[in-house]
Length: 437
Image 1: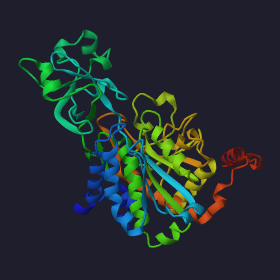
Image 2: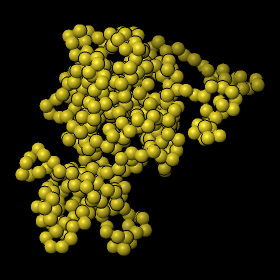
Image 3: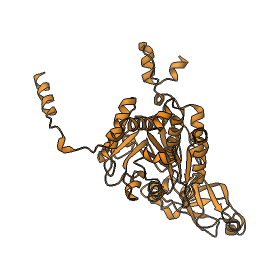
Image 4: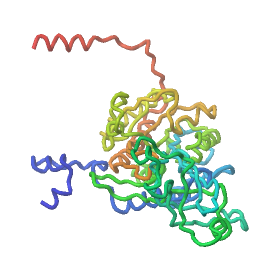
């Protein structure tokens, strides 16, 4: 039937067996209006150091909750970072404070030089140069005559070779890639004084920011979507959506009487987690949970021999184990996942989580930390791919975590003592059972 075609295999099986379909929010398609908000937020032009467009979108999305509940906004002098505080009063300092953090900055490519032929040479920053060729971009140019004002120059594309006909044999055969220094933005200028058309006519200067122009769109796979800058617009969207969910709770007052939530949106993550350190140091939370993207290791080509953890897009958010992640907080998050029947995957990290979960220890702030991830494919490309199931599940996981921490209080902060671990011989027992069978 037409209805069955819109349902997943699990729901179709439930219908055929007479059972109720899976009604959990993260098993449903994201509502069109919610997807539109996510699309608008992810499209905000917010390169490293120029993140105000993202925090403005966040404020717009959370405006109703802020106005209705008297939440306050903390802003900062050195960056466009933002924290929405559910209890800025002196009484709030006595509550358990939980900072949930996404980072607002996008990888910032920059203009390096304008050639005599009008080509605008750029750096690739954290992008693979080969993934950028042919992609449309917008250049954000500061007006030299009016510093502090910017123009958006659209219509250019990133190029490097001009055409395959001009490429060296090794590049044509695929045995060698292009180099970052070859990248330039093609603006299509022609005629005399091409350089002057760009530098004087358009006003482009070295240092102007370059962003890929690829808003998200729905994908082919169930509940998937793709586009540029899921890293880390998704972390900001999840954090803002968490604020909306908390505001809409029937028991919101009860939860917020126990927990002070700091919805944080940090800058400068992509170049060293610098913005998050400031936010953590200024507000000194008891708990910091970073929300960022993670890899779908199972779909990554050519890495099977690396023995990465089994993590898949569409199978739920991830929780990092290792580095500075606090085991007792991770345990509380896992209890929250069980309480809410929310899928959760475990990732393994070494010395560094690779996320803003490092902010507290780098800022010398004593707090429990965790790193929650949304598994995606094609990270740091123009076609990052994710599943709305994981986005929605992440939001509900964080909500359940707030409830768990609020109900458990100080009991959630008991450090595990491995000296009390029980010695078991389960494997031997299972082997004997198999042998007897």
